[in-house]
Amino acid sequence: MVRTRFAPSPTGSLHVGNARIAVLNWLFARKHGGAFILRIEDTDRERTVPGSEVSILEDLRWLGLDWDEGPGVEGPAGEGPHAPYRQSERGAIYRDHARKLVDAGLAYPCYCTPEEIEAAREAAIAQGERPQYTGACLRLTRDQIARYEREGRRPALRFRTPSEGKIVVHDVVRGEVTFDAAEVGDFILLRSDGMPTYNFAVVVDDALMEITHVIRGVGHLSNTPRQVLLYEALGYTPPVFVHAPTVLGPDRQKLSKRHGAKALADYRREGYHPDAVVNYLSLLGWSSPSGDEFLVRERLITEISLERIRATDVVFDPEKLRWLSFKHIERMSTKELADAVDSFIDRERYPISQEALPIVVEAVRSHLSCFSEINDHLEPFVPTLDEAGMARRDALRADAAAQAVLRAVRDRLASLPEWEDATIDAAVREAGAGVGARGRALFEPLRIALTGEEHGPPLSKVAAVLGRAAVLDLLDAAIAPEAAA
Ligand code: GLU
Image (cartoon, rainbow, N blue to C red):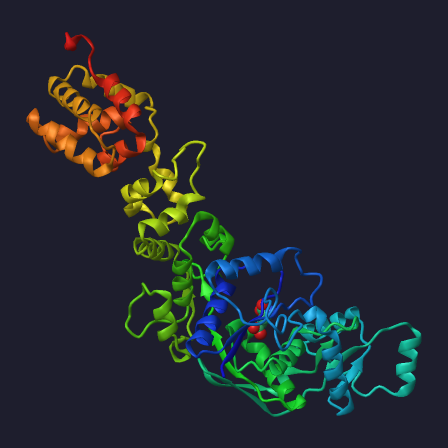
């Protein structure tokens, strides 16, 4: 049974880089009918940002990445069989594991203060040596311990790393990656306040939560030898490690806001199609064997494979994300798209009714790369002309051919039994035929009369949305009065 996890630290909201890790883990679990687990790694209290857990959960829900265990799950077993899923609530479990390591002689208390460690680090760097723990507390006597305790020092707990030998990490993407144990050095498991470090908590949790595949960013590859040592020391089997490549901005610098890599919540607010975001994020490090880039969720689940995750850096391309959003929007039914854009419409400026919405959506849908862009196309559906529009309309009054069209269409529309897109369209063409006008000669004067513009969405749809009374008023305003006499 495949079990993957997404283990964000609640230090802010999700962004492109970490959301892509969630996507890969979710796709892989779903492909294999396995479980996707959400775990909150909140042991670093200073970096924890209030509210970020809530926003991470919201972002995952928006992306449609449902999780089977973890915060927010309300199953028969509560959050799941391995609850709690917040590291801050698992202190007793880490202490228990720490005790086992101490008893086995694999960990020892370290009384060095942060200042002492920093001073030793600087001294090592100054001498051109590797800045690594000196082992000052490795063999403390009882007396020394008693003295430190009297001074009021609280010990951290350090893992005793073998002083020589190789540590081999098996990574699906990079093959065997070998580290020198001597380079790893003794590292902290529990801080002096009793909180576990990332490397310790992650191993204990991944082991107890029976995670089979750890898919994460390559930034964590350098942590993995420590984790491999801990699996061994605790008698657990390591999972399969998969380190996805780093995401860079278009200038090949580490991705940042300046590259248009916004928080995921920004894409949500702009109304990118969530399937497009999942699609795009999956391509940050993985590719379909078909070479296709526009991939619906079901296809992503079928096609995902760890072997196709590449090792080399990937470049974030906001334009491709936009294009994919356009493609995913193109697939939506009118009803789905109307529902999706509804909450994005600036109704103070564009009071589009619920009945009119599907007609508007039909008329403008081919222009949308994200839902909020609907507002860029709604002006024609509001019966107010700007100054330039009024000038264009007034010019129609001196145009005999245009006047003939406007009059014929006005008469025909005034008596139209049903006010509907299709019937309006037929009536306009018929009236036009009556005065020998079609194509541009027919539609341009009408469009100017209704919207003030020469170009725009299909005229019959605009008229259907404006309503008969408004359309007749607008036509009357474009018809020269004295010519009637
Ligand atoms: N909390 C870690 C992070 O957000 C998780 C790393 C891991 O997946 O092991 O980077």
